[in-house]
Structure formats: C-alpha cells, structure tokens
Amino acid sequence: MMQQQLMSQTESKGAGGAGQENVFSEEQLAKMRAEMGLDKPFTIQYFHWLERVVVHHDLGVSLISKAPVSFLLKTRIINSLVLNLISLVFITIFSFLLGVYFSSKAGTRTDLAATFFALFFHAFPGILLLILLQLFASVSGLFPVTAYPDFPISEAPAKFVFSYSYHIFLPLFASFLGGIGGTMRMIRSTMLDQLGMPYIMALRARGISERRIYLNHAFRNTLNPYITGSANLLASLFSGSLVLEIIFSYPGIGRLMYDAVMQQDVNLVLANNMFISALVLLGMTISDILLAIVDPRIRYGKN
Image (cartoon, rainbow, N blue to C red; front, side, top):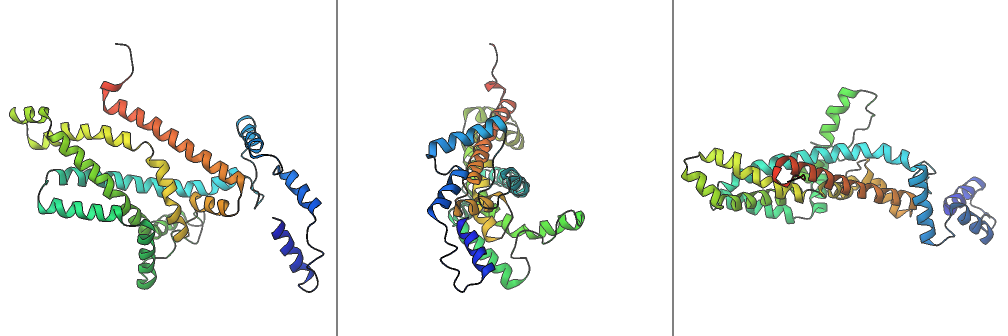
C-alpha cells in the first residue's frame, strides 16, 4: 500500500526530483501498521479477526482494494459455484455410466483401452492440458482463449447463457478429462468387487437377469464407497479450479485468492480458508445424509 501511494504521488508530481521527499518515514509506517493492526503478534491478529467474524459477522476489509471482503467474495463465488457444479455433475454421471459399462467388459480389449486412457488422463498434468487446450483455441480460432463472456448477464440474459456455455467448453473439457479417470476406475473396481460377492452368485443361481443384478443390486452397493470418498470433492474442485481460472482468465474465487496471497492480503486469505473449511464440513454433512438415504442399515436410531 505504501508503494502504491508512493508511486501515485511520484506520478502526480513528476519523476524529476521527487524521490526523497515522498519516502515515508518510520513513524508513518508504524502508524499505518498500528491502524491496520499489523503491529501485533499473529495470534492476537487472528483472535481479533475471529471475534469480528463470529460476533459481528464481519469479514473485514481488503487491505489492498479497501473493498469489503464479503462483497469481493460474493462477486466471485457464484461464478466458481456454477463452473464447479457443472463439472461435478458431468464427472459423476459419466463416471458411473462408463464405470458400470466397462465393469461388464472386464478383461476385453475395450476394457483395457478404457483403463489405459483413464490412467493416462488421470496422470496427465492438469496445467499442461489447460495450456495445450488454450493453444489449440488460439491457433484454430474455434474457441475463445478466455472462459468468460465480455458482457454482463444483465445486458442480455439469453445471449449470456449461450456465450457462457461456449466460453467454458474447453475448461470444462479439461476438468472432465482430469477428473473422470480416477472416479471411473473406482466405480469399475467397486463394481467388480461386488460382482464377485456370494450374494451375486446366489442371485444368478435364482435366474435373475444380468441387467437387474447390475442395476438393482451391484450398482446400488457401489454408491456407499463413492459417497464416502466424495465428502471432500466439492472443496477439492474449488481448490483445483485455481489453475483453470488463472490460465483462462475466469473471474472465480480461486483467481481472487491467488491475487490475495501474492499481495499478502490477510483478510481475503483468511476468508478463503474459512470458505474452504465450510465446504469440507458441508461435503461431509451431505455425504452422511446421502449414505443414510442410500443404505438404511447405517441410519442412526433406537434398536
């Protein structure tokens, strides 16, 4: 902040001979640190921030832009929510469809090829994939190199929806390729484990059709490990979209927090940590509720 004020003063007065008179004294620096609370130990600063958040419901003000932190988060969090929820829905749907299908083709060439590509994209560096897709968009001209329209939704809502879908296609495609590999392999391996269980052999001995065995029995039992393992998926998606938002200039919360860390904007960084922690708790709560819905055996209650 001092550097920004110094540069603005220097530009206003001219570059010639204005160097020494604009340098802030130690007293001015100490006064500014005291006003911002940066002269106290870190633990005291943290507990003051915690008291302000819990008691007064105030996330504070950005040390750089001087805007309220809640306002900055509100303007970016919706964009990140939309992007990550769309990615989560596509990854979940296609992971289950492909995992169940390839579990029925276990040992075939199709299954081996699918497993190879799943491992390849799961191990492929996400940042390199995003850069390659952006280069493809730049060279071919088929897609924009940015992931957000250049006009607000209030200007033309219908046009904005189509333009937004067009802009986020490549980032979503990269997220899809990077996320579907591990999830599909987990669904496939869980299905194969279930198909080897004694109850599946008993169902087949009773003449139950393979389709009913797959969908009504084996598939239902694959939901438990997936739901349990997905408790932190929402938080990890928000954290993982940081690189995507930076490369494709997407105005999301990840890019905002990256700028906050680089500028050492403490209030914004603390608010981001609180937001990610809330996502973890929310994911665990949703996971427990879904487990109780899917599997009645784990519901809590009196015997």
